[in-house]
Image 1 (cartoon, rainbow, N blue to C red):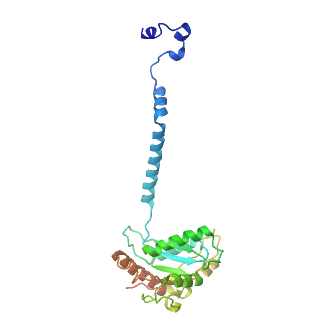
Image 2: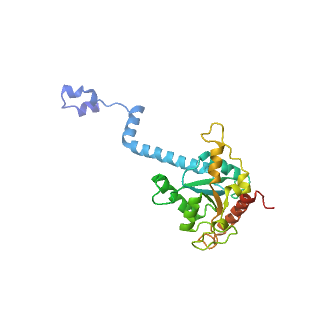
Image 3: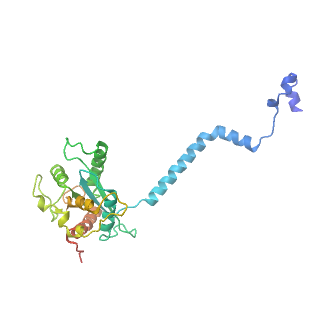
Length: 253
């Protein structure tokens, strides 16, 4: 009779108004009420869970290379060629991080060699310069390959390459023959199988011509900001062993 008491002085229309009738909550009404007040929190929680799951998956699937080898050129090299080069070099490296596999990551930094060179896309140039700077500062790559113009540019600007015996050239030194070896004269590199797949957009001759443009050398390490890091020192020595194989095709006993 409570409803009658509340509507004692109400008119007939108010008394018979269906909207005024109190009904027991249903499962749907409870959900609608919950969603009305909490949908923002639910959506935020789901998004957070998805981001967290993606982060965990990305970390779990991330592969840490044992070696990084970098190529500096004025134009991009085919990704499939870089991947195959890394796979081939892995056969002559060691499992440095103990994950049960040997992985060599080959980076390609595409950078113009002069301010007037417009052949390199501005975004590609910026990205390559940034990645290259981080690489050099952190010592990710100890072995660098480059075409003629890129080699001279980086050596003049950064004295990037050491002599083949590991000593550092003086700033401005131009005896490049003591700092590098052409791809075509590096016995190990020449022995690698970089043949393309049948469905490739490139030919074996094209890929070979690209590689023949390159020179290989070791970066300056002694006397740099990273040479007092024991881990980097060990990595440098292992990279030097891989570099020696690249030149001679022989594994140290």
